[in-house]
Image (cartoon, rainbow, N blue to C red; front, side, top):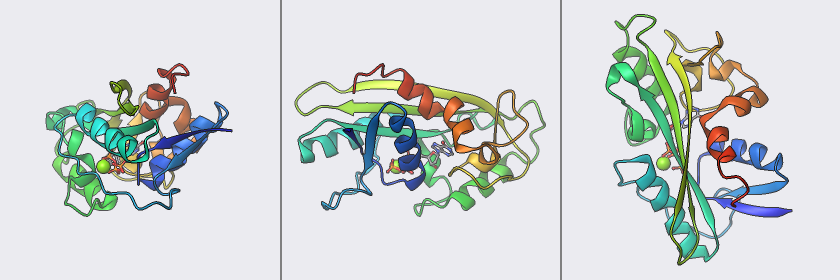
Amino acid sequence: MKKIIIATKNQGKAKEFKELYLKKGMEALSLLDIVQELPDVEETGVTFEENAALKAETIAELLQIPVLADDSGLVIDALDGRPGVYSARYAGEDKDDKANIKKVLEELIDVPEGKRTARFVCVLAIARPGEKTDFYKGTCEGSIAFEERGSNGFGYDPIFIPENETRTMAELSSEEKNSISHRSNAISKLQGRV
Ligand SMILES: O=c1nc[nH]c2c1ncn2[C@H]1C[C@H](O)[C@@H](COP(=O)(O)OP(=O)(O)OP(=O)(O)O)O1
Ligand SMILES: [Mg+2]
């Protein structure tokens, strides 16, 4: 089976890439599957594109093979787009999903239903050694719940209600999430180019 390397150390993302690529007859390997010691890439960019490129290009250069990276996050309108690019470290450097969710819910405590619109954004970067990096973007529109619900998925899924849904993303099955997610929307734009 054809393999693709995803430059991520996030278990939740890695699982979704495996599921989504398996449907295309490919095996997605994450940095969690690779025994070779690889550095933690510092995400110093201020856009999803910059951080996705940093992750993909660093690992592609080290391994000398094409590498895909995903930089993603939650963009909340009532918070002027926060946490956005800083989603993983919103409540601190230790990337604590529970703490991040708590911070968002507290910041939105006085924001009424209807004004809690948000979207998940995923930018994929494909780096090929010595070539220009390509980008593909996917989004998933929705709103922020008033409390956490569900235990599937990862990250902000327990507080994100996709458009035309009453359940949170964490209450959907992985098949349901994969049919609407920002990640699957971005992958579908690749059109076999990886
Ligand atoms: O489908 C999703 N469902 C829920 N939350 C999500 C999703 N997709 C991204 N997110 C959140 C998680 C994290 O707070 C941030 C990604 O941050 P981001 O830097 O791209 O990933 P990361 O540091 O966890 O792993 P890595 O950089 O190794 O890929 O957005
Ligand atoms: Mg990261």
